[in-house]
Image (cartoon, rainbow, N blue to C red; front, side, top):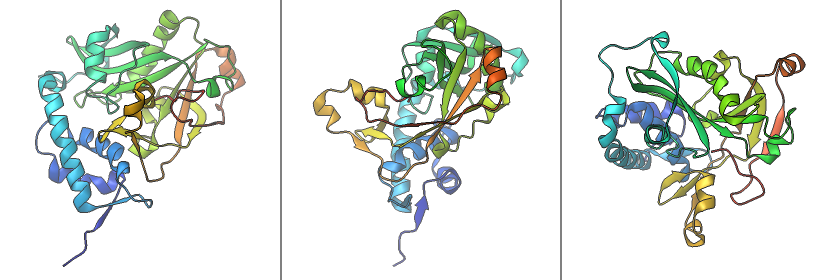
Length: 291
C-alpha cells in the first residue's frame, strides 16, 4: 500500500488539488485557494505539509460551505455582458449594507470592519472592487509613525471580483485616498498589511506608489468550529467560546506592512519608506492586531 503523499501549504502546491475539486462557478478557484491557504495551517504539520487525503478532505469541506454561503449572492460575482476598463468605472463611497455583503462573504477574511469608510469602483451600478479605510487602533505601530495620533488611517480590506479588469485595485487605491481625509479627518499617512502566506505580493499597492513600512512578526491564525476568525472576532467572544478557539500549528511568515505618504513633507523626508518591526500580540492584549 502506497503512503499518503504530503502536500505543502503553498499556492503552487495547492493549485493542482484546487483544480480537481473546483467544479462550480462559486466558490471560484481563487476563492477556494485563499480559503485553503487560510484553513490548512490548522491541521498542517510543523514543516508546513498536510497528507494529501487530509488536504483534499479539508478543501472539499471548505468548497461545500462556501458554495452554500455564496449561492444567494451569485449575482454579485456574475460577469457583466461587456467587461469594463478601469476608466469605465466610477469611484464612489458605498453604503454599509452592500459593502458588508461583498466584504462579509467574498473577501477571504469574511469580516468587514464596521468603523470604516468603504470606497468602490462601480460599473453599471455594480461593485467591481472595494476597499475599506479604517481608523488606526494599533498603538505599537502608531507610536513609531512620524505623524500625530489620528493622522494615520488603515486600508483594512481590499477586494476585487474576478470580472474586474486588470489593475482595478491600483486604480481604486490611487483614487480612494481623497476619501481618507474627507471622512476620517486630517490624514497624512495610510498603511496596510499584506499577507505573503496567502501568496500576496503587494503589487497593486506598489503600482499605486506605496512604500515599505516594515513587518509584523508572530503571525498565526485563529479558528472557531474549524473556520478562520479574526483576532477582533476572538476578542468579542464569550469566555466559553474563546476557550474553544484553535490556532494554526505551522510556522507562518511575518505580515508585510506598507504605507502611503499623503503629505509632501513626509514624502521628502522618507522617500524610501521605513523599517518598523512590531510583534503580534495575543487577542485581548494591549494592542489589537489588524485582521
